[in-house]
Length: 630
Ligand SMILES: *[C@@H]1O[C@H](CO)[C@@H](O)[C@H](O)[C@H]1NC(C)=O
Ligand SMILES: *[C@@H]1O[C@H](CO)[C@@H](O)[C@H](O)[C@H]1NC(C)=O
Ligand SMILES: *[C@@H]1O[C@H](CO)[C@@H](O)[C@H](O)[C@H]1NC(C)=O
Ligand SMILES: *[C@@H]1O[C@H](CO)[C@@H](O)[C@H](O)[C@H]1NC(C)=O
Ligand SMILES: *[C@@H]1O[C@H](CO)[C@@H](O)[C@H](O)[C@H]1NC(C)=O
Ligand SMILES: *[C@@H]1O[C@H](CO)[C@@H](O)[C@H](O)[C@H]1NC(C)=O
Image (cartoon, rainbow, N blue to C red):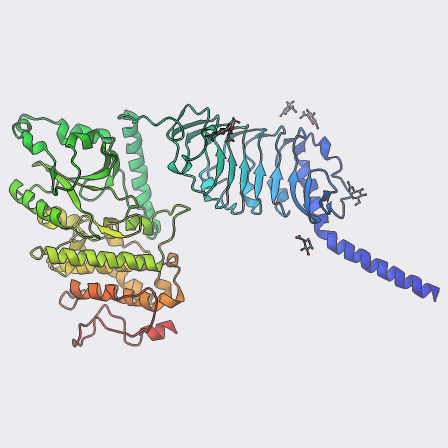
């Protein structure tokens, strides 16, 4: 009897201890990791209780068994090794298996570079490296992927180089301490809401980003080249020759990268290419080149404002303002200039418009200037000189649709969802319809419809730009660069019609829905545009499923039918046979009746009412929407 009781007790004890062991086996593993971590530390005398045999439990309630461990609810959650005279190496690798939410090694004697692979500690909410001797540049991607981190304290070290841009990728960041280092360059555009940050006593320069201008000036102390609110206003810098060189280098690099990017992945491309420096613009600028002939036609140097309601400014003011090169399109460079009133304008220079006489040019531009529609970027003023023309429009903050579709998205920027894309294409359609109504005698009322010519205002309403230029453009140049001249009728039969813009609209729709960059935009000159046709066909033939849509569109189930409708409209607009292609009126009608959400998904063909034929660009009958959606 007694023995059996003893056995039961033994059994219970064994079971209990087994339970204990299994409950604390995690802690044993953690303790072993910590021992490994300790090996690369120097002078770790304060961590003498970290030793073998390792403890079963690192924490009893919130009390740590080993010095420097952070505990919560009996669980290990982090390390706080502060003021221990520690040096050596932070061996991130050994910490990877720990549930490490917080890591602090403040007030120690660490030196050397920012610990490598820190961003592999994906659970970290706070990281304190302040008051050590860390030095050198922090790699740009050092914080990539640390989605949970809230606090980063790097103050009072010897870090140099740029502030790593991966800090901009941290959605939860609320506290960033960079003071008392030697960080240089500009402050990147931090966007995180209610971010507390200290940049004081570094070597930062340039303007404080607008999003940080509400901060207390004590966040920016001791950076002598930093300016702008809350510090002293920035002095406008006049031309700096260095910039010309930098711009030139950037041009080369961006151009090369641009080409390579397009070769490697058609999908993500940056449409702007940088070209000329402001200096060269000024040197060549018409206002600064007074030939005798120019003096004779002094009045010709004036900007012509197409409407009375625009604010007036002089050409000199525009060119004298600190102009910024925006890029060089296929027609010539464009510049952003802010005039004294603070309004920003875009100046575009055209050299390939010299076959039109002055009188005709003025007349036509006045006509364009009278156009007024919420989806057209209005012409503000123009300048005429025989060799070159300047067209001035307002500057639109949000950039182009091409940028939004193919450019790199800023961390705080919303994705273009389906409702937004639908609103954009509807606006484009309305703008086009207006152009067609107002320019009844012009063959190609737009002529250059593509995503980089669709600008987006602050509410993502589209504004068409670069419209109506065909009549004043030199023909060979237009044929080489304008989108309408890449249509099948132009490349094959050398003819354009009032349906040619519909082709461009179709390509735009496909681009908008698929998020893919139409390769033909890059193509210059004439010749068979097989690349474009291939692209269109491949979109339909190979990918005629929901897969075709841009993933960024957050394709909601309840809208797929409408998306397919728009895709179909795009295909119908891309009909090769001009006679069978929709006219603009029909295309616009179809687009504006699209809805954000599906109701019924009735199927319709490209044919106009009563017209029975099967379009080449149409999908086969058996591929009806309903079969696709099942
Ligand atoms: C740590 O745990 C061991 C047993 O694993 C125990 O002997 C020791 O007293 C504990 N130390 C502290 C500080 O809790
Ligand atoms: C503490 O931990 C236990 C078990 O690990 C869990 O059941 C409990 O919810 C935790 N308490 C809090 C407040 O998180
Ligand atoms: C070692 O650590 C002690 C405190 O634990 C500190 O006083 C001492 O300065 C440190 N020595 C070195 C060489 O870092
Ligand atoms: C800090 O570490 C260096 C070596 O890296 C050592 O020479 C120095 O004494 C240490 N200072 C303190 C205060 O521990
Ligand atoms: C800025 O901060 C300092 C100390 O952090 C404080 O003394 C000062 O009043 C603050 N200034 C403003 C305008 O908030
Ligand atoms: C930033 O750091 C500097 C230097 O350490 C300090 O004087 C200043 O008060 C800090 N500012 C804020 C807003 O914490």
